[in-house]
Image (cartoon, rainbow, N blue to C red):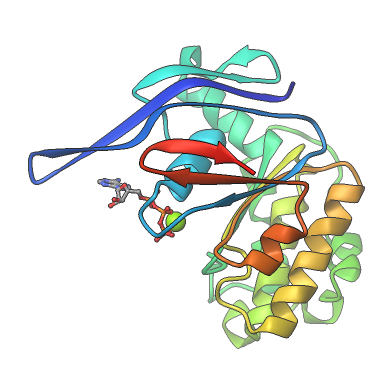
Amino acid sequence: MSIQLKNIKKSFVNNKAKNTVLNKISLDINDNELVAIMGRSGAGKSTLLNIIGCLDNSDEGEYLLDGKNINEMSNSELSTIRNEKFGFIMQDFALIEDETVKHNIMLPTYFSKNKKKYDCEKIAKTLGIKKLLDTKASLLSGGEKQRTAIARALINDPKYIIADEPTGALDSKNAELIMDTIIELNKLGKTIIIVTHDENVAKKCQRIIYISDGNLKAE
Ligand SMILES: Nc1ncnc2c1ncn2[C@@H]1O[C@H](COP(=O)(O)OP(=O)(O)OP(=O)(O)O)[C@@H](O)[C@H]1O
Ligand SMILES: [Mg+2]
């Protein structure tokens, strides 16, 4: 079992009112799964994804990642885990617009302690953006931006890919291309967790998990 969440609780305080977003949820995700998370806006999908990706911590409960207790880790251990184990893909691409495609893709490697060789060109070629490596990110189409973001997510060869509405800002044709790429990555062994509002995207996943009223419901 690669991701094990047990009785995870997360609340936010807004204007002194406590908003319990995740109410003791438990979730196991196996190696090489492709899982969709769905639920209405504000249900807590990004909150859950951020906890899984070690971008945020829970208030209560236990999170074991590959058998290691995340709750007991220091900030520097967590940033190493984020950098080496996770690739992140976001709805708004989160690229540095003024930098080239190549610099954007290579960004995670600048923070990595890992001294392995990174093959930016090969990844770019697989994603069909090799010709764009010297182009500024601001000049790309939405689909090209998301393929750049996927390349950046892959550059450290992470075990897990966390995608928060990766097709939300794309037209249906580009959304389908991005989803095909995600399915390919899953076939190559990546464990992928994807938040989506799109039934067509969710249907392509092995498992759909719904969040509502702080609880999870599996299909
Ligand atoms: N840092 C924060 N501080 C205060 N409240 C927050 C914070 N992050 C999230 N929330 C609240 O937690 C709830 C869940 O937010 P979250 O972003 O997880 O929803 P979501 O399911 O991803 O929604 P969407 O589909 O719109 O992206 C919302 O009510 C939101 O306002
Ligand atoms: Mg969200």
